[in-house]
Length: 432
Image (cartoon, rainbow, N blue to C red; front, side, top):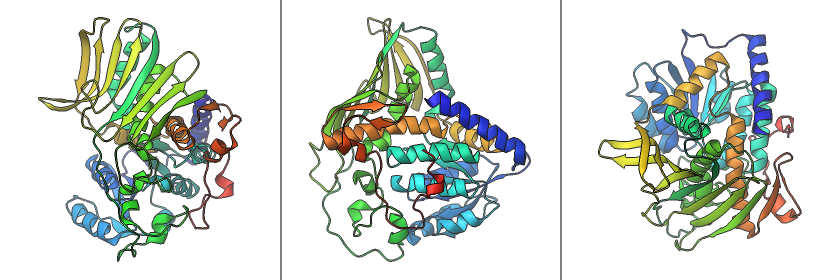
């Protein structure tokens, strides 16, 4: 299914580029706006500036304190003079903006992407690409129909060392590949308990909420802590786990599962988090399988990593991820034989390959390394895992129709309800 949508998306993109000409020449800087600056967005903005051929024209956030901090940071950017704004609509009205970079909370990923596509912008959207499975499909179809470049923030897709790892697997170096294990095992913070409170000065909470149902303001549902509330986030399965799931299914050569089984719940944190701190989920593809394990309440890790992937073959196992070495953090893979002896490894420092790939594809109109179709397929794994966790039931999934069989309750969680808001996805962009 992913290949089919990939081919259609690429064809539509090429056709659009041929009809309109390339909007950004090789001599021009690509003009971008960054939405959501309290963390990842601030880092992305600085990394895009460092590429040298990018103009950050707008920095967008609904918290004036965050914008003030970002203003101090941006003051050190040579050759950049971004405008600061809280209303995304002002950014999208600017015809000089080539692309929108989205690092807002999960519930804004799809609405902002669809608005940007509708305004003729390309998009870099952080993971998971959507708050729920239906939104991801809308994003895929909107990008295809409008011929826009949409890069998903699973950046390992652009690391050459992981391309090399895939080639090693395809060459049969670890034998016939049967299954993979992906894990998210790290120590997260206990967030405690807080009562609802007035909206802080300088925060446009209505815009922060967007099209999600409006809840009272609560500090434990706001900056970063929104990850642990279903109204806004997808838990750590969607937050970090999607990275490992993406690598696992890439190396295994699988797309969407046909069955999803397992469980998850809070067993450690006694606080305001709603999403689970522990999960064990199996994705069944018929001949192959991925097991995903999550524990975010301990520092122990697995296989000498916090978060990682193991690809099991008949003649060996490959570990992929990141390691702390005497030379600093390294990314890549290690291969162990049947006696668990290390027989090969390739570890490298990280570079901004993924951002470079996005900027290059904005110019060339070629397909990016992590298309929205790829991002949607990896993200739907997180969504299906969360449905198993929330319902306590195993699922049968049809990858062709993206539906759950014989479970109306679980099927309702494939989408969500929206409140009336200017960001609510338009029917004209819902092509699923």
